[in-house]
Length: 284
Image (tube, rainbow, N blue to C red; front, side, top):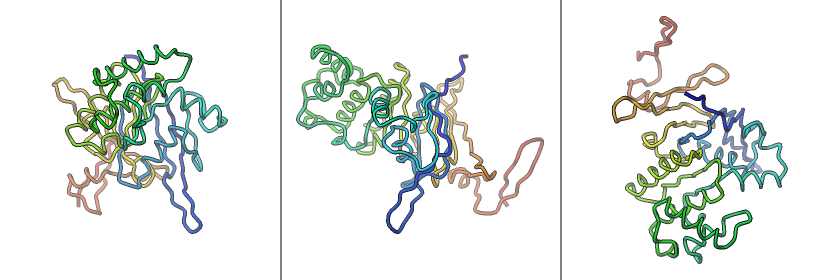
């Protein structure tokens, strides 16, 4: 099996938001590696730093401290013009609210066409928009306006727009937060299909902890750091299993997810045992 190639490497990311009286640490020394072609979710409670991380990956914000490498290039060594080119050529964004994604006075096809860069004729842009709308399941609705379509259909247009310039990475911030559970499942399945068919790396920020069943890897952020990871492992049966990993910080401290602690019935104190190279944590 071919070894996965690293696409994104985050090193020691710190992001501080300052007002006159307060400093808020959104990220506190976060490290993360993402491989080419991954379908992953970044989950965490409100204020955990997940949306801040997405903005940094998209080049929309700069860290207070730390680096993000895309391949061998440190994103924040780029000039403003180079950073703009990076976003245009490499990133497709999908936001939670449809009014951030679409122009209401343009049809579905026209929304895509105005987002296409490069030397393409009007006819080529029209053909490209029809191709993408078909890919996201909206064939036959190319000339509909967003207001004539459901929230789920509008998000499908937004996903088509995100794909229109053949990006390496799709960044989706709560893309199912404004739709019902059935539509949410359909959009999540669409992301999986696009990831498999096109090989595009997809990173989804969400508060939905159940999204782990729809992606290959889930990273949980707590207090501005990675606290645990869950990797989807394809079993011999039709169902997938999940392996969960906790992360040691630089001081050797271990953060265990609330779900694992609750499942084990652990409150505060535990017994730690070193047995045959394994560290076992037992309830007292």
